[in-house]
Image (tube, rainbow, N blue to C red; front, top):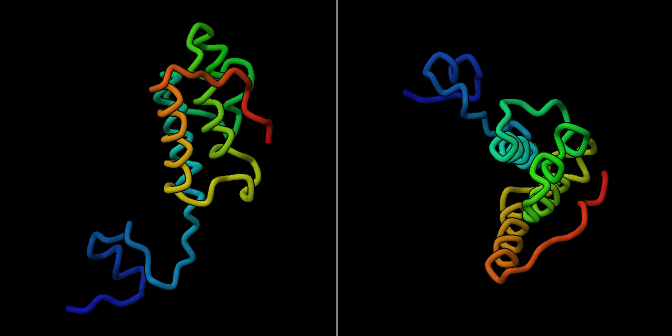
Length: 119
C-alpha cells in the first residue's frame, strides 16, 4: 500500500496528524503553543485567551508575587506567546536555549528582576 499526498488518504488511515510533504510548516506556531501550555501549567488555569499573559489576572508575577522566578516565566512567554509572528522564537530549539539559560541562572542562585519587554 502506498500513501499519497492526498489529505483524504491520510485521514482515512488515521494519519491526519501527519501533514503531506508539500505543507509549509510554521515551527514558531509550536513555540507559541508551548508558551500557552507553559502559562496554563504555571498559572493553574485551563486556558489563556489569545496573547494576554501579561494582563491583569494573567500575569504570573502578580499571581505569584513572592516567587522571583515568575519573571523568567514572563520572559519565556514574551518570546513565545506574542501577537506578531516575527516576534516569536522560530523553533522549539530556540526556546530550549532560553529555558536552559534561565535554568542555569536559577541553579546558580540568580534572579531576573525585570519584566519581559512588551511586544
